[in-house]
Amino acid sequence: MIHLTKGLIRKWLDTLLHIKDTPERTAAAFALGVFMAFSPFLGLHTALGILFAFLLNLNRVAVLLGVYSNLPWFLGPYYVGATMMGARMLGYRLPSGFRLQLAALFELSLFGGEFWQGLGIVLRPLFWPFFLGSTLAAMALAVAAYYLALAFIISRRRLRALLLHKQHRG
Image (cartoon, rainbow, N blue to C red):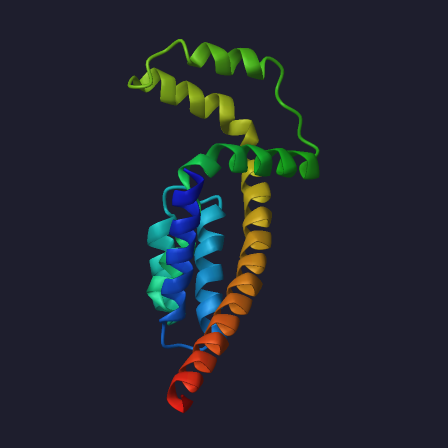
């Protein structure tokens, strides 16, 4: 499974190298996608990424590569951690009986409306911690993604230019 992830990341990063744009704009497009991927707008990240790519005239491929950097097995731990960070920053505590209410919900069918209505009621007090925590964490990840993508793109383009130069000389 790890090899699949490394291969997928390598493929995404190699795709960034073939984009005919400046390294800074390509890295910015990728960072925008990463921000959307980890933002509180869960479920809307693709549509918002494409919308902002068009509005800011950024490369759509680079934005989508960033958007899809949030892999399914990251979702739960990331949003729980981000919500906990937001709760700590806002001074929120879990409502009394939160764990019991949440556990009781899982005795209901996931396919019934009662489960989803109850989940909304139980999670409502955590909306602002979720929003703040995931927005700040998404911003931090986007900044890191920008600098990492920029360094990667510049180094790979230099290496490619060096190799092409050597081929032409020899």
